[in-house]
Length: 461
Image 1 (cartoon, rainbow, N blue to C red):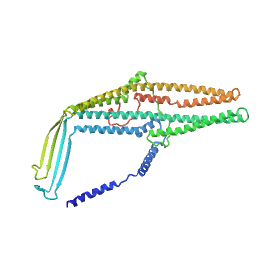
Image 2 (image 1 turned 135 degrees about the vertical axis):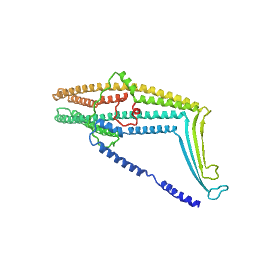
Image 3 (image 1 turned 60 degrees about the vertical axis):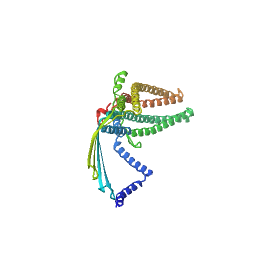
Image 4 (image 1 turned 30 degrees about the horizontal axis):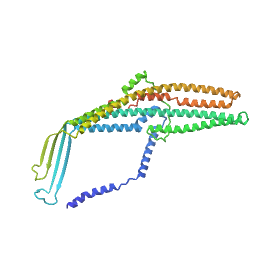
C-alpha cells in the first residue's frame, strides 16, 4: 500500500524531470532565432527614430535611452539598490517554519499513532549587532555612488555622441570639397591634355594633371567609405543598427565656453566633478568597512523564540514555546580579526590615495582641455589664413602659367597645396566645438537631458 502511494506521487514528478532533461540546446537554431528577433527590433527602431534628419539634441536623446553603457549603468544602479535593501533586512526579524508528516506502515512498539505531524516556528531578532549597521551604511553609500556613476557615464556618452556627430558633419563637408576639387581637376586636366597634344606643354605635365585627378578621385572614394564608417559608429552610439540609413540636419545648437581664468575653472571642477564625488563615497564606504572589521571584537546579542507542535500522543506536551536571549563573543580566533582590521585600515588608506590621484587627474584634465580649446581656436584662424594664401598663390600661378610666364607644373603644384589647405580648413571647422565639449566633461559640467530618477539628490554629483 505504501509503495503504491509512493509511485502515485513520484511517478508524475519523475516523468516531468525526464521530459525537462530531454530538452536540447541547438546552437544554430538559437542563434538564428536571436538574430531574426534582434534584427527585426533594430529595423522597427530605425523606422521610428530615423524617419527625419536628426539634430545633435535628437542624437543625444536617443543615446541616453538606447546606448549600451547607459543601460548597463542603470542596471548596475538597480543591483546596488537591491543590495542596499538586502543589507537593511539584517535589522528585521528572521522567521522560519517547518512541518513534517510521519507515517508508519506497521505498528511500532510503544507507538500509539501510526500517523502524526510535526510543526516548528523559529523567530530571531538581532538586538546588538553593530556590523549590520556599518554594512547597511556602506551599501547605502554604494547605491548613492552608483547614481553618481550613472550620471557620469551619461556625461561621457554626451561627449562621444557630440564628437561623432561633428565627425560626420566634417566628413560631409570634406566630401563636398573633394567633389569640387575633382571637378576642377578634371577640367584642368582636359585643358592641359589639349595643350600637350598640341605640343605647347610637355607630356609629363599632362600626366601630372591627370595624376591630380586620380589622387582627388581616390581621396573622394576613401572619404565616402569613411563617412559610412562614421555613420555606423554614430548609430551604434544611439543603440541602432550600424547598417541603417541616417541623415543629420546639422543643427548643433549653441554653446558657450566656461567663463573664468584657468585657476577658477580648476576650482569649479574640483567642486562638482563626478569622479571626485565617487572618490569621496568610496572613502566613506571604506571607513564603514573599517568600523565593520572592528565589530569583530564586540559581542552580538539577539532575541529568539521557538515554538513546536506535534500530533504524537507520546509527547509530553503537544505544544512548546522556548524564548530567550543569545549572545556570542569571539574571544580568540587566531588573531584573524586583528589581521582583518589592519587590512581594512590599509585598504582605507589605498582609497584615500586613489582619491588624491583622482584630484590631480581632474586638475591636469582641465588644464589639458582648456589648452585644447585655445589650440583649436588658433588652429582655425591659422588654417583659414593658410587657405587664403594658397588660393591667392594658385590664382596668381594659374594666370602666369596661362601666359607662359612660369612652368605649368608650378601652377599644378600650387593647386595641390591649395586643395590640401582647403581640406584641412574644413576638418578644423568643428574642432573648437568638440574641444569645448571635452572641456565641459573635464570640469563635470556636461548637461544631459532630464531623466526620471529614484532620488535626484543621490544621482547628482
